[in-house]
Image 1 (tube, protein in one colour):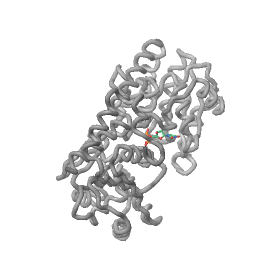
Image 2: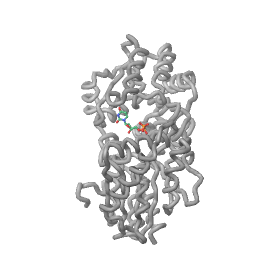
Image 3: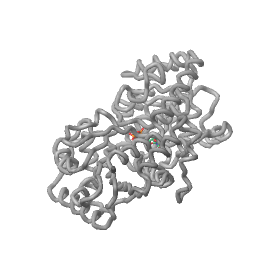
Image 4: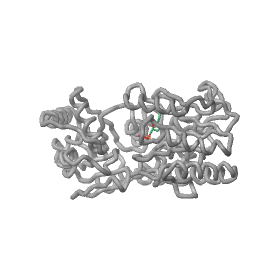
Length: 402
Ligand code: UDP
């Protein structure tokens, strides 16, 4: 058993049949190998969330997995934040001093860490330049979690100089792949079915949690969980709800968070509140960042989950809702289209009217809601659970660290 008690065995009852045994067989081939992950934060954000679970499970499987976190000063993180934005398409200014400092911090970090391993997986741009200090032994792979579909050219040209020195790169969606002279792999993100966000909840616990959030349960709930961000189209969700509301007495819950430390988020939240007006059936919830169980309960209480993004990276909220057996009506963009099989596990839409149409279609048939929800849960079980993520990383280790 790993030091914080997460074992691969605990996933046997949720993972697809045979998955845990397969992982055990796969790990036999790389037992005792050193597999180091490097990122820039121990907590907060999807990457840290997944590593918190993946690393102990890998150790439980007999792999010497370690997780190193790089350190940097505020200037460094200002630069990497600018990278993050530029690589996702927002124009940013970079000075030579910023770029030099970025490299210097990477060099200093590399000097302080044990990077001799069979496989080193460098997550995202922050530690990408550590490749300059790679030891002669071992394979290095750059794992990109961000949306690289339309990067600002100068930022990508700078980062690419480091990326090409890796043995391979991993992207989260086919659309994020780049012209590179190294092998590229596709690894979808995943959700952890045993984490607070997704674990089983009793009906009583769901009721109590919703009661604490002051969301009543006597009407069907349409739910969207997402940061208050224009690309998530919360206003479009309200407009779709208004159309649906003419035919069905439903309630809309828009649950988000993080608006307090994001000036644009605060503005979007304000717009959402204004658009909701005095409608007593619209609930706008500004949740703290650790509201995992609340989100879990909301997703479980919902009748239909909406993720009407107009632009999206992967869209983990879609997998989270599908895992809870909910049909999702989602924007036809990014990873949402990789998760929703049209008419089988949900519906993808390109407009407010489209969203309203499929929500009405579903509300008219409780049987269809159940059927799509079941298919959605199975689809997530097969493709988007942490056990599949683990299989992909172990396969990479087997493949590269021969
Ligand atoms: N989330 C959260 N609180 C919020 C809004 C979102 O914990 O107020 C979680 C959500 O459950 C999901 C993640 O943040 O796990 C959002 O990931 P997604 O890929 O859907 O969108 P992103 O925010 O990365 O664009």
